[in-house]
Length: 56
Image: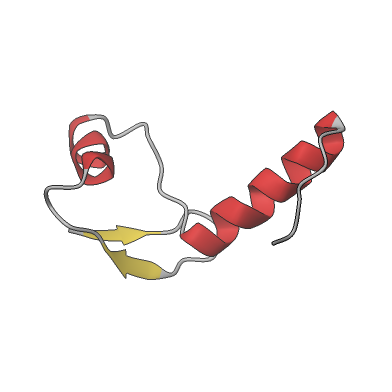
């Protein structure tokens, strides 16, 4: 399954058996974000909440 990132418009290939692919197929309200955008958003959200992220 091909999925397009909501933020950067990058098209990624997702396995049809992946739970994320099933969620996107069955519930169109759910959106896909690529791993880079997801990490960027989660880092900013954690800093906004005051949780520090360890860099390993």
